[in-house]
Image (cartoon, rainbow, N blue to C red):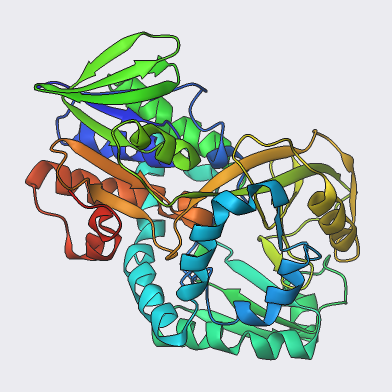
Length: 414
């Protein structure tokens, strides 16, 4: 049987490749960069069972004035991108109702249920389990008001049976002795884990599939066309590649790949930044910390302290800006002591759909064409479980029920 061609070698692509190979399929990965160099490299390393709150939860209306004025370090936008983003933003805000948010949370909970187990499965095969830390994920609140506003998210954790513990200021100091005393409350999602280098984990998964015989083509897919016998990938460095079955898992670039077939996807690029800093003496955090008011996530990685920003809505290839990163670095330094930068700022792009759900499954009316993108901020968490479920759907012809809410047909029509 001809190989499955996967466009994209990030966490989604390599995880899917691993599960297809385990089912006896030949696989070819096509990506312009080495595996795990885009969003899979730059994320906060969190494998969060608790990421059920959709990005367009109703609470967003309270923050919308600050977002609109471009004054928040949580969300910024490039004004030049607004005309193109306007339809996406309209759909996004239309979903910011209690009923729709609750439905999305339930759907995400189904996908997140075995996210950690799916990572552990691949880590055992790839021999990188030493990078996993089962210490949970901490959300920290500087004010009582902010903690009260988080009540809806805590209610979702309770609803779905996601283990978590609430701490006051004294409990936080015992939990994380090197965290400053500015935080009054914390919620530790114990049903979560993290890794000390997400790029290294993704590369280990990629090495696993390449050692098992997967092909790797280093080229950018500039176009995709359909013919009587399948598809042709038009690349910049490897010419035209004939493909019987294609999975588009190219992250924020997925929409551009599909557009050449006339398939229009409402995909936005949620750009994010991070910077890594040296450790200050023996100061360490034992788990990732999300400073809710500070609008950043801080993680002690193998190579230093990583401070990651919120989102920037802009064209995927627009020039980098430094305003968000400067703001969150200043906030992070009031919460934890760290040294000078050890690497230049990094920027990546997370693919996001306006309903807060990824797109996983077959493209209607296009036999042999599949999607696996749009996971937004939960891409690293859900890469392996998405790969497992999609591989099952591709091999059996029947998608597991948990994938039904993520079917491309909700946006795409044949």
